[in-house]
Length: 485
Image 1: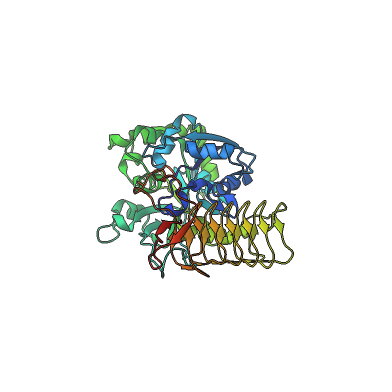
Image 2: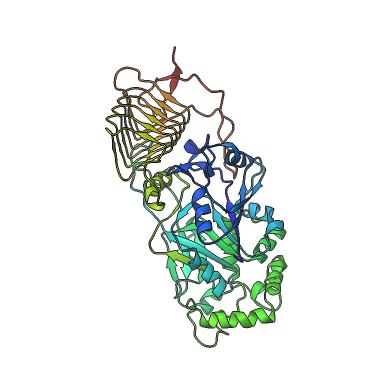
């Protein structure tokens, strides 16, 4: 591949801290595979043989030593670790590896799960000699109830306003609702060149970008840009129609480097080949003479918008639940791992996944659920529409519905748990017969508030509490615990 693949895998998962305070976001299990496996598999399937993975030392260590973290890819992984105390954005991370970047790059986020055809994005990039091409999809409305939450809760996310030309491919305008004062304002320089523009909302940035090498070099000299999504992409889209990048005289000296590098990339021979490519490409909306197709612009941005198919960013608890629900459809593997010990007298739905080394006992029912590696499920247990992570023990007679049970938790005998999130290594002991837990997050609380950043964890948890708890406050959203005698 003439593109270098770069995988961003150092994000902290600040919008799903209940899951990530004990497991780094890139290694969260989705369908019993680490989240990072999905973009790696996507890149491998289209022919990449090597990928630069920007991550943290903790993720690197777990990939190397934890037997439960199996990436199952043949590609060479060039793991580049960033400092965990560094407040780095995605553009900062790309700047950090500038010396490794020898060609144009394909940047992918580790939380992307999609069946998109990557060639759609890459073809736009090649055919138009674009500075940027990116993937977007229609926004999804998650229907599943989120554990730990009573009633439906609005996400509060701001909309993006995306302007495209008549082909729906040229990206002309991009702004977030939060950045607009009163309404959408379109610059005259855009309207003169593209008098017909379609403004779209309800789209989600998939965080998959093809970028010129000159953009990476530009970032190295412009350290004020920290985020690809929030700063770099809007900047490139805006500068397409700026005189400083398209006229012979560079008015804005701040952007000299970007223009200079773009000129270096295109020799006279390259221009001739580019002319032939553009003239014969099915992506162009012009035929014959291409001299006016780009209106003199050397900096060009394109977007491929998925109309159908799977495209999720697993960056919220709701998205995580949806990704696990779809997992059985994403890869062709047995629903029950060959090493799992499953009783003949149990019922396992076709839309469930049973991980390696699991033990599933008699008279157990598992439907629309994922059961993690080395999990033990005793007799007469019913698990419906739930995610059970690795190493969990569920004692006899439990009923678990619409819940997420994190790694190494123990659910005591006869527990009735509905729409709850139980944290890692927690032990739920019945206090009385048939305890009923509904719509709460159950985990040992933080000692201090985590600070959002690119690194994967909040501050360290306090010393491991006693292994057994009793519920003290039945009606609070977050259950309070007291030590068992």
